[in-house]
Length: 332
Image (cartoon, rainbow, N blue to C red; front, side, top):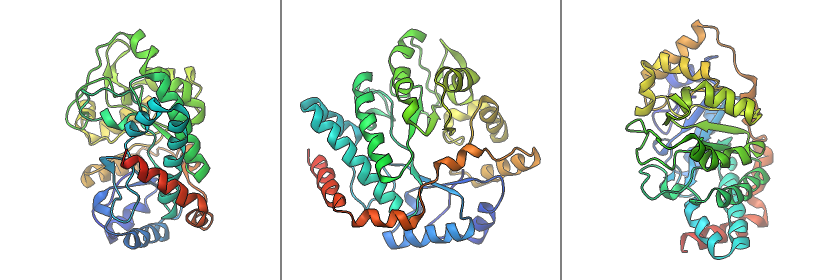
């Protein structure tokens, strides 16, 4: 899975998207100008490669790639605060917000938003913090269940991140390798517990570029212990395992980009992300083709319903109701 440079598809990018080694596209803020421009971009991408998986990070708060012309979404932590005041209201709002987010993203022909964040809230975290529902695993499980149900109701598959939990470390994996020095028991009883409880409801999982020395010296995204033993065998997870972006600083512990890609695939990742580095993405695409690494059949399960069916979601009365809920949370 790679990215685009701007708001229109270039000839070079058309050629890239048609390569057998490329199975996904992730969009960023730089790819968005207006709703009509986004629609034209997605049409161009689909004309080039109809079956490609198109993704975005449309979480809400500071991690919302499409803003002007889209609903301003609350952070998950804002939903969590409503839950603390009124549990039922919080769960209802979690579902409504998820439905609105997913309906709007699907409306433009995009398959998934990498959501929800299942990390635990910790105010010291430089990258998670407000992106998380709560500091309590039990509360995250309840709220995420409602959120996933809302996504599914709109027609979107859910991808939990960042396994087995990125919220309890201060460092930002975009800039350095975070190391979680807690005991294995503390990690498994808290952060990991959220993913364990929700595994059966998820279609995708994204491991963190975080190292947990009590369990493995490799960071989770390169770890056979975390991916093969925990995700596949212990949790019996049959969905798609996405690597986090291999261009992030924490991922560089795996060596050159092709070495990183090999580590992620050997550990058990089904799809690897290489973003914000076109040269690196091409190197990985070349390597995948040279090694004859087959397309993983699981990836297709993340695709959304055809756009013709999705188009009707905007016309539903439910849209206005969900929109009001979202707007009330922003003001909360």
